[in-house]
Amino acid sequence: MTGVDHIQGTTFHGRKGDVQNRFRYSIDYVLLTPETAKGPALFSRNRANLAGVHDVDHGGAPGKGAGVSWVRQVLAANKLPEPARIDLLAQPRLLGHVFNPVSFWLCHDAQDALRVVIAEVSNTFGDRHSYLVHRDDFGPIRPEDHLGARKIFHVSPFQPIAGGYQFRFDIRADRIGVWINFAAGDDGVIATLTGPRRALTNRAILWACLRRPFGSRRVLTLIFWQALKLRLKGAVYRPRPEPPSSTVSR
Image 1 (tube, rainbow, N blue to C red):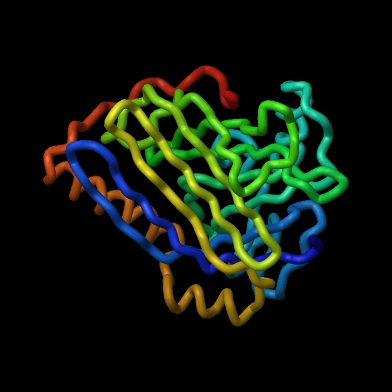
Image 2: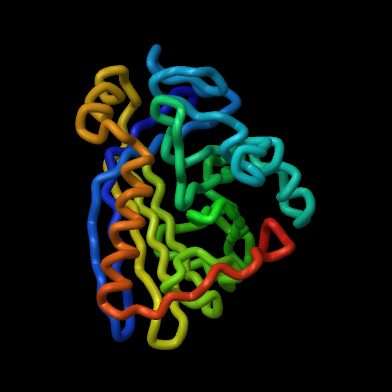
């Protein structure tokens, strides 16, 4: 993978439990190998442009990220093999602004099989925690595999911290699918990201700006809108606790 791919995706969230809430929105993601990717003229890495990806936004605390080098440090610290390729699936900066509720580092072996995923989860309070997931036998991650992680990070004030995630990934040459199932007793959330995968073009960037001119500011607005709806429906609000001392868990 030498270019930058565009995911003109759809995200779905469905709340489980007594207070029901569902929504589906269109969203733009990019999939790239940061160290080697060369996108169209309107896309840049670590430089100002209409759209782009910056290392400081990923791989560590928000605004203090180290990009791919952080991923390698995490894998080494957990005694996992060095990947042949590390890709990033994330929303890009648009006009200098970005907010990713979740982005994914995809670690491939020399046969191009997906072996390890790091899910970077950010909340609206400015905190971030990453979940390191892989098969128990460290084999290639298949579309039917469900990869578990214990939830320890506060995301939504309307969901408990206690519980667990089940991740599922289907990363293909022509489309991607990511499914996250959070369960805490009868409560929880199902979240998905799906969409076709195509080479990113200047036309696609301009069209995305016309369709969603506020980029990730729109994402934040929609998050707060859904939070208001949940509050009006009577969902219990949980104050933000201190984030976990560890930045990565598995």
